[in-house]
Length: 85
Image (tube, rainbow, N blue to C red; front, side):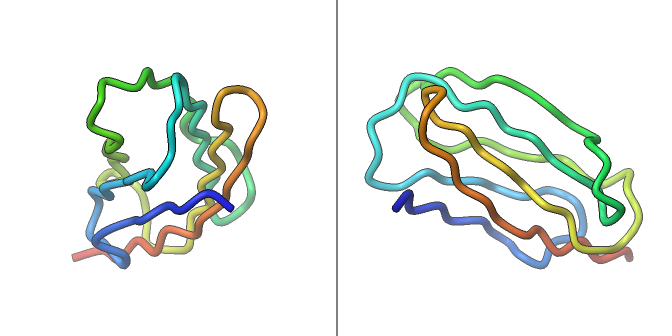
């Protein structure tokens, strides 16, 4: 299993995503809204930090679904809980 830490979760918009104990070169990150529509898609290269941010601050409150594909093979999923101010 891939060990992924998301914090803070719930969040008011900015989520930190950390991939722990993994050696990886590239991650494809997809974010889906509560209706299941793709709202963000990006490729990230490993810069040695194993951490990146997702910004949902302009989106409505709800549960968002994050799918990560690591090095085109391994996948992991996480629910991001967004709360409005």
